[in-house]
Image 1 (cartoon, helix red, strand yellow):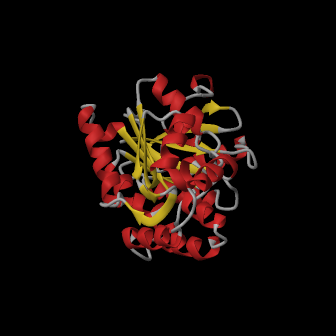
Image 2 (cartoon, one colour):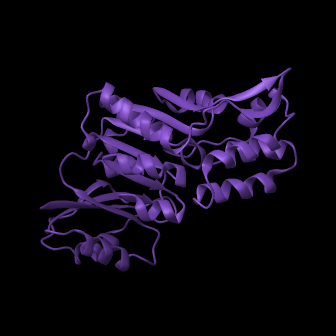
Image 3 (cartoon, one colour):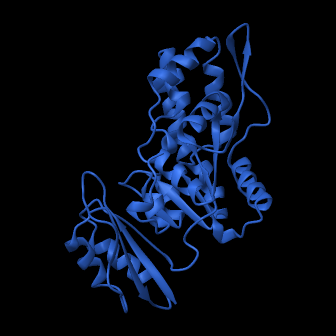
Length: 295
């Protein structure tokens, strides 16, 4: 069967011919290297009944350099649906932790967030616990956090612009809050967004979130629903996230990608991006540099 190994460099570690040669030399029946973007990304096709040994050998050969790599079947690489997590994926922060900073309790809430994202505690009760600690926070603080603390992950706008230009739909599906997903989706270029609703009274957080909480299962259901509405096959979908509540949708997608993820997620995903930005998801799909739109 034919597979392709994709090597992806980054600003700190450009992809070199030496990296490509080191990986290519370990592949069975490798084709010539096909550069998608000089110094950034390269495909190497090869044939084997089982690609796993080749992938492990390539990882071992490049273990001391910060180069991302992934192995996929050659066919059906370009996806028609992207479902993405928001916090620590499309943006660089966890919104709830930044809200906690407004009350001076960021370390307390961040510790719970970390445990939930690692899968050490259930997402839903962890969210209720953290939101309860935010009781009394003024609604103006949410806008302040969005404007001053939230930073987009590089490559997000190019990712959505390029996929949408080629007929794909992009959905932002978060276990966070709609106040932020609505704004981030509009800024980055997502078609739809889904998240939890914080409850307010007299302009302040009540310390509760609207039930039922949208967590791991809601993300799976969103992917399945969109896939059905678009009449897509399993192989035409991609999901990306970093935390344990993303595991379900990552497993449900044709290509599940762990992005700068917790170990439990990186180990389970079809592909992992540990070093690059979000344009890496385009190179995984075989897009070339001249096809990428800046957004």
